[in-house]
Length: 240
DNA sequence: GCCAACGTTGGC
DNA sequence: GCCAACGTTGGC
Image 1 (cartoon, rainbow, N blue to C red):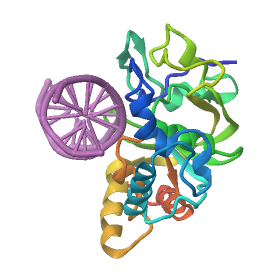
Image 2 (image 1 turned 180 degrees about the horizontal axis):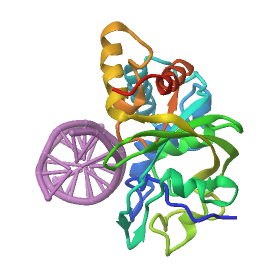
Image 3 (image 1 turned 60 degrees about the horizontal axis):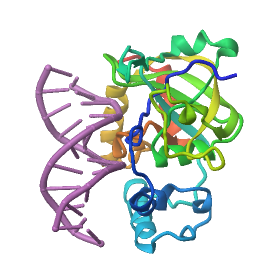
């Protein structure tokens, strides 16, 4: 079942040696486990960390952590690049070439991205985004066909995303399965989305808070319904 | 290839 | 717990 797949998001944790203590305070506060679904501080985490996270959230998104997201943007690199000797390229054509045009989205090693992965629901749609390439932008629509389960690559020493600190009894990292739905009617370049984002920051339009720009390094990001609808409507327009 | 943004690490 | 150094992401 594990299809070969090389998604983006090597996250900073890929070769960390000493996890725990410190980490538990910083990112795990915001991201660790499932506690944060509720709006209370995770058990055993520092309050200040939680508060900071909440603050950051409202600053960048203007939304509360309560809102449930229904749409996503997934970054993947369409051009070859070696990571620990392994090519991490995974373009939309690579996705289409998979059995059932389905892949497991492995290799995510960033806590915030992981938590978004874990909140994905069966059938939800996502944009497939090409990053770190000549023409960054949205190329396709995909959907979640299997909800979060342990990412086996964290236990595989040969894998570039191996995490020696993760225990089988309590895996740190998750993945979902995604299936190709269709190409967008045209390529929607980052530059165009960004131009709308800038305009909307001035006039309060739907892309004013889009995470692609406020959390530029996050490889898995949620979109609000309005953001999703607006971006999708761009495929009907003439390119410019 | 450059480098800004930003997350992580580790000394103090 | 602060913060400088460091490493990675990813646009350009």
